[in-house]
Image (cartoon, rainbow, N blue to C red; front, side, top):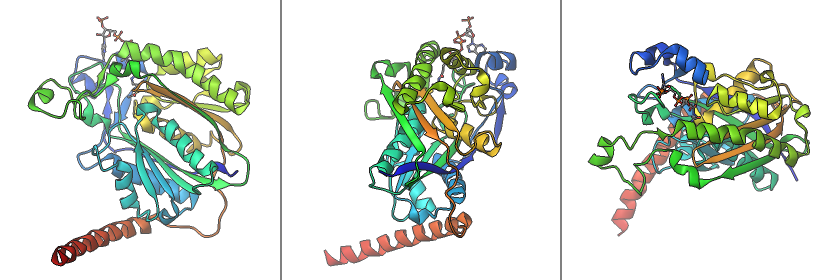
Length: 367
Ligand code: ACO
């Protein structure tokens, strides 16, 4: 049975930064409160022309470059996002088109902030089963578009960004070792965007009632998160036959520094064993774990051979954890230049649209 190694990684965040002081000009809050209660100093916010697909493509090209994999070699793209560009088509298909990933299947996975763990596990299982060789997993968000900028309980928390991993099959042991995934839909109403789906399609009254924005019972989510972070980590460790002492780094979903602190206490580990960057990005939902990991790899904190736990929670309610042995890129001949594929992807997309237009004309004439 092949192993599923993480061989490429990349991240992208919008240039625009919103500080706590900026927020204090919009709502009744202040820098000291936000830092103390959440650990957040600033977050990146997307411009009008930035979307989950554009940020995701940026992160994906970086990951493909590290892995030395061409877009045309990808078998499967899973995009996990809590802020999809459309109900359909899937954001994964927009990413597939912009990358020029001609042979890839592509779909979105919605498990809110736990999404990256679910998606990594799904991609790893597809590789382990032998049905595919190369997968791209993207976590990408512009949740700022679903924030009520008058609600100080939520607008201080979220930021935009994307992270991407390339997974490849290899006979060498390592890569993704175990994963656990959990859900409890009975807690779905504690964190939701109530309208815009088929239950409450957009109407004048849903817009007036602010139902297209994130609604959250912060205390309830906080209690739930502190309960599940340590237990999910322990379950994933048990499934891999590992002990917590064998783990070099824990990479938690970056939602609130106090939740990460509670997980550390639950596992009886010092905070130094946790990768934390919430201060500069806030909660980027599905992108928070890969963004934290990419930064840690680039700083040289995560090294080949290190054993890791990724752990998260989110709306649904969902939670889960995954253990992995870090690989790094698989050495291969030659180097690809993703920049060339950016142009190729655009050109290919244009040609495909033109062909479809001509086919449409011919088909109509035949009828
Ligand atoms: N600035 C200043 N004061 C504030 C703010 C603010 N931004 N927000 C709330 N307060 C006030 C409240 O009004 C309250 O005042 P009161 O005592 O006079 O009534 C006081 O501060 C305490 O409020 P709490 O809600 O008890 O604050 P808490 O310490 O619980 O922190 C927070 C709130 C940060 C939202 C916290 O509950 C939390 O992080 N919850 C988890 C949220 C989360 O992780 N969500 C993402 C899940 S992932 C996903 O799927 C998208």
